[in-house]
Image (cartoon, rainbow, N blue to C red; front, side, top):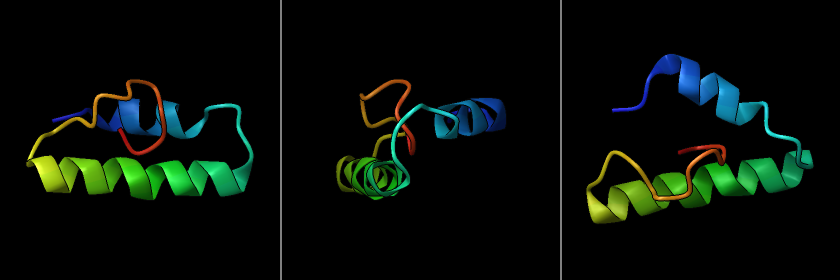
Length: 47
């Protein structure tokens, strides 16, 4: 399970807000679909 610090540091990534929101949903969907604690896209929002 990712730490709370990692979640906030990943949200600080330098990318447009729309892209950031898209990555949050896509990465969380991957985690739900694969029943994993990580989506495999380290450092992206939502992972």
